[in-house]
View (cartoon, rainbow, N blue to C red):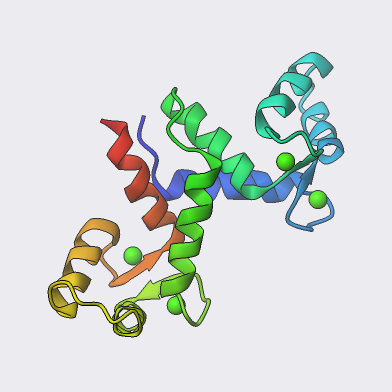
Length: 155
Ligand SMILES: [Ca+2]
Ligand SMILES: [Ca+2]
Ligand SMILES: [Ca+2]
Ligand SMILES: [Ca+2]
């Protein structure tokens, strides 16, 4: 099974639905309450929490949730936290207006600011959009970048 933008959006909605106080973090209690509503046993919930919260601080971040979700879907350990954090950092360098999308213009600006000295910027943009812009709208979203990264490990 492959990871798609749609699947990531569904996972995000699951996360947000379980996050009862909408603070962007899933506490163990919030998760427990949500799963109890589905009749899941305490043991199963404990096991799930163990995997979802690898640093055992009682809070599940979106990244922790996503790592677990992706590895579950793929059936092996492909995603890990450090990977998501690095990707997030890179993405933010490109998405300068912070709207969740890196446009061709933003990428051009970012490359110029980095004194990009590889092949010319236009081919760099073409390369980036060919590899990461899944829906070909000339903007790269965080999800598109993430999926592209994961795909390298799917084969
Ligand atoms: Ca919460
Ligand atoms: Ca945690
Ligand atoms: Ca942007
Ligand atoms: Ca796109």
